Each structure stands twice: as structure tokens, then as C-alpha cells.
Length: 252
Picture (cartoon, helix red, strand yellow):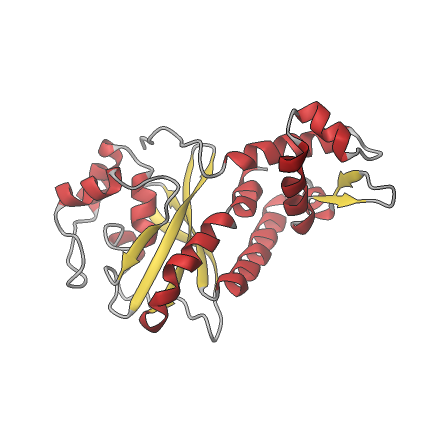
């Protein structure tokens, strides 16, 4: 599978967070924010927001003297055979918090072995998930999830996908012309959420942002019933801002 060059935004802060975690890990007895800033080269103002996020996610803890030490979440993620289970639990907790924050069902999707797959999601009575009336593997051209994943492939990768999953009209809004679809994908800014305005299903709107973690192709998405469409853009912006902890879990 051929990928497009990895964008530096919007998740460059994750690279900084990994540098912070490496620094904290080297100091078993704890390390101050001043020392972290010195060793990482990060401005203290930027470091403060990173440390706040890392504390919230349980990757670091602040002890009584104000120094930072490795938190329980990072310990669990490094615990050998239980790492995968710990990662799934951590991601599920993050998704549940994100669901409550944006007031929408949220999903993690990956492009695995040439197929679109929803690997985890969080929904609820007031935040119902999408009714998968057409298999997501066959609807990449129409769904926010699928389009977001396709934006991360190069032209050959996209053509390969569409050669196996023919473009079909799912609603009156579905793009069914390959040239038009590719043009839309190419013009999609990497820092702007991909939207699905009833292209996959009548009565549902969705948004997705890329999860850039190494060579993996993935995305974080949300869905809303059409009566909440007025909240889509603000919810999508929140999704974009809150994606960093998800990327960080995938990158560790």
C-alpha cells in the first residue's frame, strides 16, 4: 500500500509529547518542568499544555515536590503481554471521554490490509452510532471515515481500493465520479476535518480527522443525526483538538 507523505500537522505536538515522556522516563526519581524544558528544548509555555494533557491521560504524575514521574497509564502500556489489552482499554476510556465531550458517537478506524475497518467506538443512548446499512468497506467514497483514510493514500493506493470496491450511489449526495472524488481528496487540507453531509446515509452527518502515527493509516471520527447537524463543525473542531491523546496512545 502506497502512502502520501506524512503531514507535519496537526499532530506534531505528539512528537514533542514523546520527547517529554522519554525525558521523564530517564529520571526515575522525578524531574522538574524546568529540567524537562532544558533537556527537550521546548518552551516552558508550550511544555505546560503538554504536561497538562499527559497528566490528564495518566502518562505522567506530579509528586509532592512538584516533580514529574511516569504515570500508571504508561506503566501499563509497557507491561509486556498485557500491552495490547492495556492499549485497548486506554483508547476506550479516551473515546468514552471524547464521546461525552463532543456529544456524539466517536470511532477509531484503520486501513488494514487494503480494507476500511472500525476498530473501536464509543456510543450511547443519546449518542447513537451510525446504522451501517452498507458495509463501510464498500463505502469509502461516501463516508467521512473512508474519505479520510483515502486522503492518506496516494493515487495508486486509491485506485487499487476502488478497483475492489466500485463506487456506488448511496444517496443523492454521493460522489460517483472517480475524477471528482480524487480532486476532492487532493484539495482536502490535512488540518481540516473531512465531512460527510448525508453522502453515506440520509439522516446522518459525520466528520473525521487523520490519526498520523508512523506508517499506519487511521482516523478518528464522529457521527450525528441530521437534527444535530448544526453542531457538526464545532464538534469536528473539538474532535480535531482532542485527537492528540489518541495518536499518542497509538504511537507509544
